[in-house]
Image 1: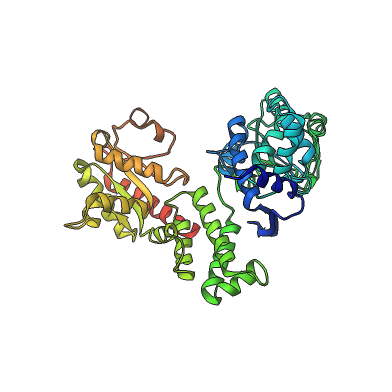
Image 2 (image 1 turned 90 degrees about the vertical axis):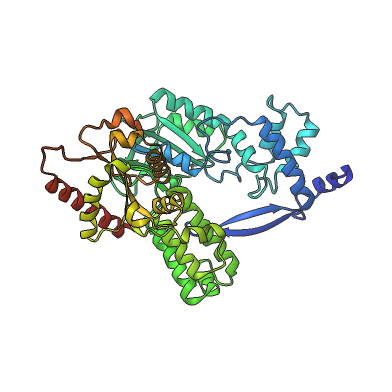
Length: 469
């Protein structure tokens, strides 16, 4: 516990730099970000006061930055599959919130502190007349001070029936309607490419009255037939990582493996950079891809395998994912009563060179069935359930299906159902009702021809998946 005289010594010296360590960290997409890390007693005071601020702060649903349970990913998901998206960036978000604004917040009705207390707290929370990047109090205070701007913007969005969210300094509007309201955007030039966007007067006024500036260089309108990006993720269909980012990470791992970590650090971060900093950067990217694409993603597994080759001392989770390289093109799931029919499809697929996880050929005498099934699910590119009335009644097949849905939650198109001719998907599995499925031939149909057709389609899907990785 800090003594009062110790606290007042800290407060007197907050502006001298004695209680801050300033350094730069690399950004994901190049460049660096300055960090002012609080030290010793000041760090302790900020950490304890941050806990008090969290008790007061009740974030609205449209705020995704610095809020527990929300992230850049939840922010991007909110704007997927929209006709158009408008991105606006707040200029120098933390830097534009200085001592006077923070002190005023503490004297407002929300806190009700007197002049002296508000002054002391504002000194603890600011450095060189700004919110310091690195202080635990800064994100919460930034969100609290941005509340007036949020109120104006959500009011505008509600009036025009738009989607609105804010992730730190990234503001996003979107809509499934083709119409773009003039209160938001007056127009843009040129029609395509790098545009200069003229924002609506009401939107401009919201920023002026809230004492924030718009970063004009980062203002952009994205239409439905263009690549749409929200908080760094492509959201035209569902949130996904840029291919160029994955390619760039592969190059970094290649450099580390072939030339060593020190040289890779100098090449990718800058001359004199330490290998530890480089590897933290790499693991940060791997964690980012894992968060977006999901645990069982084959691209992630291959990247983790590359990481292990470059640095065998990688984090444990990377080691685990490196062993999840997809050994199978697809996992055939079925009830035991349907095995004779599904075996026919299995044999055709194997004849075409497709790698299939099929219980009778993939699980050996003495194996743990549960363990092998789970490994098969994780190491298969596609999950192909044969949905029948018998399948729906079985506990085990439903466990397999639920596991597959969970594993593939962020990987669209990886569940390829085949339904018995008399099975109703919507009644039994509402979650699969909107997924296109193949039908097993009825007793009077040409089974051989239909099985060959299905096998060819599954082969094509497997080949396409291989090329996309």
